[in-house]
Length: 118
Image (tube, rainbow, N blue to C red):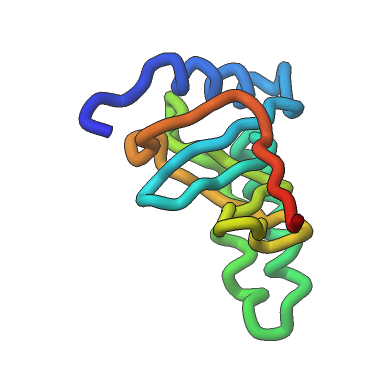
């Protein structure tokens, strides 16, 4: 996106304020369609840190994600329970943790887009 969408920044700012963690969003970024629920960055970082801490091979990376963000204004969207839509399949089926730069979002819509295996 050549100019950052201020409306999308406002949505991210509201999520970051902690007043809402129920916002479902679908974005197009780099040709991929990602759909899921937004989380405040601190919550997202904490969850990723916990997952890494439980890994025998990746535990050393846990502290990087546990550190507080230094951003004054939201620069990224933090998805949890998210899927990359590929044809009729959502990857992963159970939902993943994705961080997407707001500047790289070329299109977006409110809501979680579902997919059908039929």
